[in-house]
Length: 206
Image 1 (cartoon, helix red, strand yellow):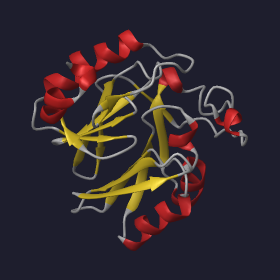
Image 2 (cartoon, rainbow, N blue to C red):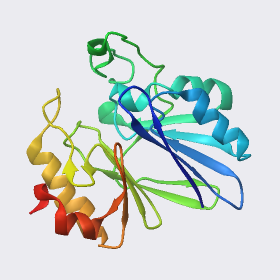
Image 3 (cartoon, rainbow, N blue to C red):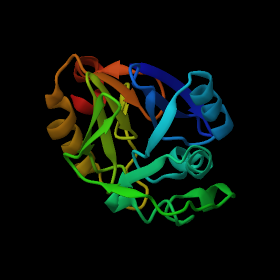
């Protein structure tokens, strides 16, 4: 498996490019800005980008999506409960940063338990609401891409429209932690971690 992490956009969101080494098929998770930089990595590595998956609909995780779609013909996926956020500058919060934008509608909508095959990689979708109603985490083998649900040493904000602290804690406690201590966490911002490390050190999980 090929994995590249890029920090993109003014809020330095983590964008992940994951490729199947046998087929060169690839997915991009959260292309939140600097799409030219993302595309350069894809082309330099000889990857065929077939899927773009958004962990949620906030502007700092979605902004580069249409640029990539137009240049790669990749399909854009988001959970159905966040589908209206990507087209609406108020709902995706971009208007409040002074540069409101909306994307085209998603190509497909995700639900809890969905499995997506990209080359020989199997992506499992976990609906982990709380930061937004449609927040998801994406599991690929022993890697978990958590968006803004769980960070190294912290958890996602719940003070934006649609946020819920109780739902966020429920998502982490019931969906993420049971996956096992050895699972590696790749969050929407900041450094990576493991579930075991977060169980021991994250003050929000004690």
